[in-house]
Image 1 (cartoon, one colour):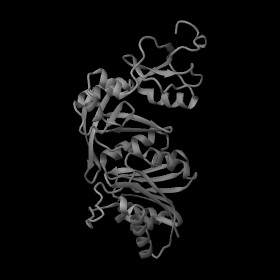
Image 2 (cartoon, one colour):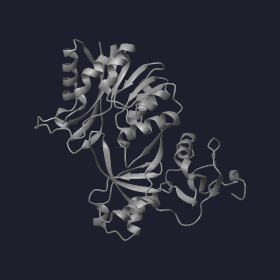
Image 3 (tube, one colour):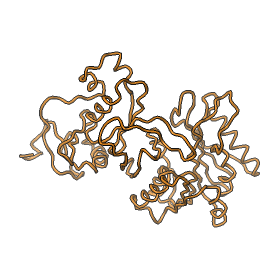
Length: 361
């Protein structure tokens, strides 16, 4: 600003920050209580964005604080689409939700007309973003996403910051579920410092990183080579090299040596089958998550806690994963105390992503 920002009371202000750190800055401004979520982040220069604020920030670093002038900005996707001439019926078919992950907007496009216009509208709505990806599902043993660039420069690599944890990823090659945000944060909250943890399906570090940042020592196992590459990068990015021991392997091959050294205080089974059977269908896809329960119990110390994720048909929610866990524990001559159950999100129509927390004696 050309004058003192402190004299700008009542003005529409924005903090100018570099594009690569825009998400970190927004999180910091929100924590500081000055982020204005009623206005959109907009491009300021080729390498910076203007993040709306209610007052000049005192704790968040920025290049400058500026006054935003001119016409009020469009605030919703519907506003942007109507400006492009969309009809009521077309707007009704537009996406109702999406996620901004670093510099990438990830959206379920559904049967929306003119996806490229939706993408351009989302870029206008989120000035910090540079690419819009339509996602079409996840498949295969390595949980690989199917995505399509519908707007922007097409760069699918990004760094997403969530509750202080940084996740580097390529959204064209590895999965990242925005709907699991609360569960990722929760794992960092419940773990105790110096706990010994086994993360059996670590991915890019979804649960490993929050737990390691909280002080746990995590053995993180991932067999997908691309996800493993980002796991190692994210361990360094978050400064938890000394607390994470990554293995590119099938977790069943790691468990015997892990358990021989010392058993885990906590085991995380964050993977769940990508194509959960319908309630009336007894078929189960190969390598469904519960088929690893014997390895999980081998790795878990008596009195340790197991976190078991599953994609469960709604009529069987909680009953099926608990029955599977109890059956596996009985076979191992161990007892189970269910501590908590959670519905994380709707995985697909009629199928829920659920988690069972249990103490195993």
